Length: 281
Image (cartoon, rainbow, N blue to C red):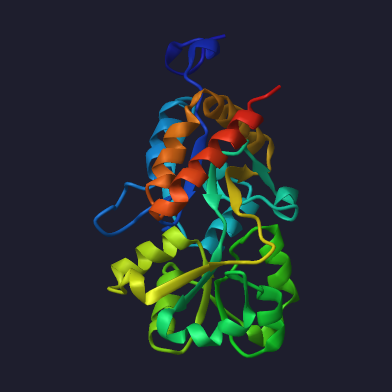
């Protein structure tokens, strides 16, 4: 039997699957604008993954959080290179092995508004459960973001009027502007991300204070997640093979560069120990 153009079917090029990589503006992981555009940690990792997977055609698509999660529900070969993992997400997303470690979310308040937070501070940490239950202040959050299992559980239990959830491509920037205008006092997020976005908007770092959340994990793992389909699960197998060959200390050092100096050494030690433990059989 002779195929099209006179070639036997076995020698005809097979069409390659297209792998859609979802990215969103999430400093220090991915950076869309500003002087460090394209210099985020995932910005540096993604080309390595693409180069290591020539069996696919790759498309990089910018999305916001809500659209990205929606696309992972759809039956396309879609992957997001910067996701937190949760039991709920594992029902419909196939996850890689851990890619990087990040400092957990904390609470940001303007220095001039510190007094609103004072009643909820214990040994330098925020009792977020008590703060939310008090009804005194609204907490700014990014809609549909996973903040880690402990914080997500607190947010789910919060009274509806205790939260101000913002959608859109620049959700954090909008929340920072609300905070700057005094319409919102408290904001939950990653310190490096808040510091970077505040800098882009002309907000001095000294104007903000950051506090960890009492009871929350100090560090979270970041993962690659793909649509939970046969092709998505196969892509995760191939991604894991690449990740196991990559030196994790480079990713850890790239992330540590975004931390305040007093946090860097502790983070690097923890990250090194974590990935050494992960590598054990």
